[in-house]
Length: 161
Ligand code: ZN
Image 1 (cartoon, rainbow, N blue to C red):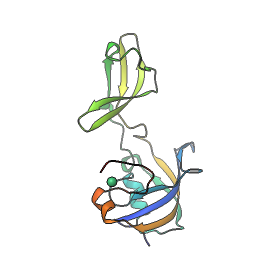
Image 2: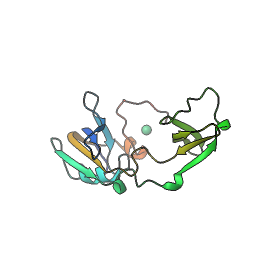
Image 3: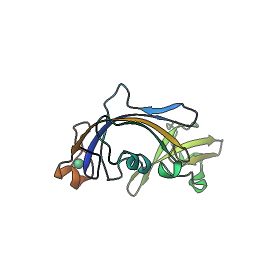
């Protein structure tokens, strides 16, 4: 079976940056399983996997614009230090979450001064060209329920329906 919209794809992947440093990998873990054609993975990777079947191995280079997008300078801003609870870990590099209309919004703390905290709402991988070494392990047709939900039901995560 070939990867196409409405197919469930299992694959192993290793993600590296331009310098060859590994950012993330499924090696030694369960493979990544996703429903193809529903935006569950970044656009550049999804497009490159289209039409391939189990056994397909490839190096896939994804430009930032087809990955997590370019960095948005407007997404960096400062907030008063006093707005952060005393028991919160407010150190550079820490990911924090604010309540948003569609769930928590993640921020990365960039700088901390006595009075201010500089925050970055960009995805940590925004602005980066990404390099994936992938191997497709299996491709199957999704169930009707998976199609209607837009994601895979493989037992690896429980959620309310
Ligand atoms: Zn579901």
